[in-house]
Image (cartoon, rainbow over all chains, first blue to last red; front, side, top):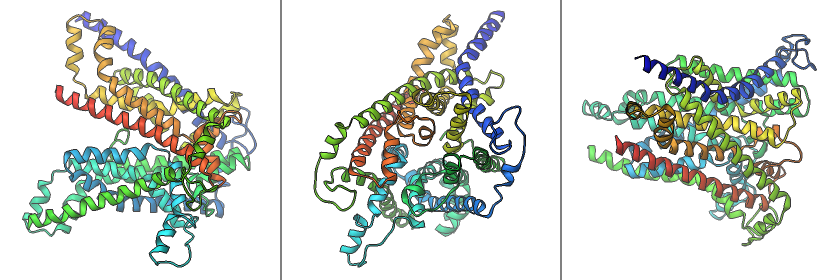
Length: 288
Length: 269
């Protein structure tokens, strides 16, 4: 017993030592920078965050301008549409994937994951090539006789939305797939045997049972969608999003205090969504 | 009735899956195809050439960016591999006080917008007078790579049968020996696949690199980004194709590794 306790103590010491480097990184390169941004957002414009600085909430108050609010609204709206479309397209995909045979499932999984890890930048570039005025899509439409003049896709709201959904959809497919995969399908059979129509069985049984996956997918799509900044830039069209606004505050206007306040609002939106999600019984999103 | 239902799904399901997969891969394919386009702009197709690759390989700036990206990805994934693995072992059994806080903080970079993290780094580094460039890149990339290794290894450790370690210990192995001979070999596949994901993340990163790099240090994705903002050229296509190839190999390998080790794990159970 005493032997065991010394072992446990040695274990605890070893574990502490092991966790040390990660703790160091977490404190110095995650916590401190974020605290610094918070501090910068709370001091008088033009000042650095330090003990001598004057504290103020003016940077936050200055965000209450019609044009800034419009930008925040733009970002939330785009993120919302991205989430809805990702669900409409991604859920059936996850569903079909989960119902496929075992061998196919592994292959499909790999096919979904690979683009997920490749550069969003490069993939968006592919859409740019496809959608450009003298590009393949216009050429196909023209040869089919569907259009006479090339359509200008790039820069439209639709093209930005398309790029967003394209970049985010794996975040929806994966959790939906694992929710359907885990579901007990005898319940659907039971509903059908009791005379329920296929659609009704889906809405009454499948949908509620896979809701945790759907919610996880929605959070995983919505949150990064709010903060993305280079996507609309590359597709063109001049849609200003929170990300663009923050970047310009830092690099063009050089107003770090306002930029920091905007970042804090962005973090608050993110944290708020996570909190609501967890409070309503959502799963841990760390692993999927 | 039931069989008709199944038949309907049998038609819908493969068609839908194929359709979405085509849309998923078509743009990637376009980038690759247009890297062989002999036209000067990314516009219409004008014939096949490999000129852009030759030009790319003869471009000293590109070679420099490639070198930087590889060094950066290698170092960050290496550091993240060590830090994340040690952290996962230390925190796996939940005996450390404040472990939850450390874990949340360390995995936070996965959750918050990259842009916020990037600007935070730029602000802090400027404030304390830390020189931007390669060292800053390695430090920040290591930070956002750690969660990938940590989460991968930790879920592996949690899924592991504790009896294996206990048995070794009961037979008189020292804690260090248990770690070296039992734990490490068992978690190695998770470590490697986590590190490969880390390489993939680092080699692709634009946002954080954009903020912490100096004028002299550029990376491949930053080159692509600046190239794209000015409209894109076939040379950027060639560069992107090479990047895609690298990522496909890394991710493919890591998936293969994971599938194989999962099989082993289940087989041993």
